[in-house]
Image 1 (cartoon, rainbow, N blue to C red):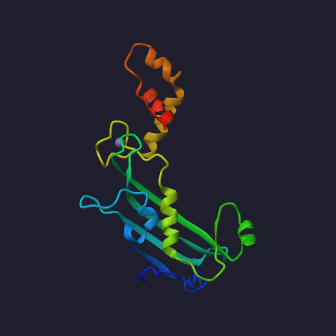
Image 2 (cartoon, rainbow, N blue to C red):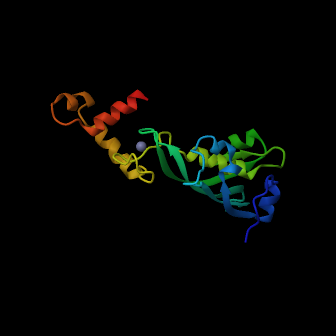
Image 3 (cartoon, helix red, strand yellow):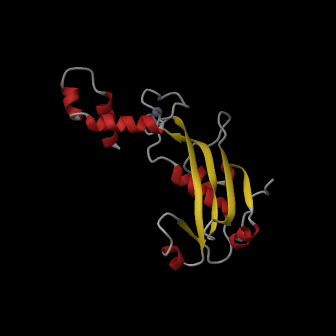
Length: 192
Ligand SMILES: [Zn+2]
């Protein structure tokens, strides 16, 4: 069993002791996230699951790794009503003491510069979640009005492929046939 996540922790000592934390956080603990999601109400309560492990990796580097996961309620960029978006982000940071050491790391690793032997682990979790939020959260096409019908990655990929493969948004509208939904989507995107 792991302990509760402390407000502050000495990450070097935590690595030495191989500390691991997992649990659940509410929006109240994450004010920067709270500022960008739709507030909790009687219908929906946001929960953030996390796992944070301090240890040395196989090459002996002190690392903080783990996973953060949540289902966030955001305003749909198409209809502005709620859309629930699943976010999951791996945490993988290498602890360093100086900016110079950070610059020397392989590009594969994100550095966490710790100069005063203290970090706030909740900040790491909140940073990962904020980075994991898609820039244009929205329902799947036709899914507006249904809170759980979020657009998944596959749908997004095919959507983009079709839109870029079309001859052009204006042609399909001028042809007299029914408007091409992807052309309409492109128009909506341009208006943002
Ligand atoms: Zn929508």
